Length: 208
Image (cartoon, rainbow, N blue to C red):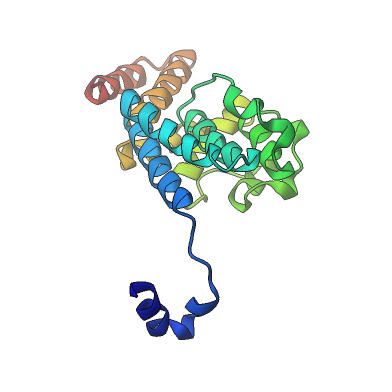
């Protein structure tokens, strides 16, 4: 009855012709959002629990592309946080994934020579063509682009500061600590002791 009433109320929006979203999809998306929030905050146990729930929901479809999309979200969060571990979860599904998913996985891994740029999400196309990461509006996409560019050896020095400040503004402890570590290495290479000291104070503040 509630659905009938809702469809009448929203008839002009086309409710009568739209099938309801499968429950697994909404549940998996909710769990995936929980995973992303927990992972970026540095809450590893909670992130693992939420990821397992999201993956289990998608696996119930028997669709490799659906599960692969869940795995790519984890790969992207790891890339944003400079976790260089291979995305083995997606690799196991790659042969049955979509071409766009395989292109995105190669982009995240820094294997840009393998990437068909046209298959990438729009916000990442300019980056792979040599564009800066700062113009990317979405903070997580900006961090993902920074991490992918660093792995590909294509990140400009100012991109390090942009990534660190993006993580800082969002309160994302895990990527913040990772990017501050990269910034410290660069300051050390430049012999800038004052900057090293300043960055280390920031790290000390951000440590849990």
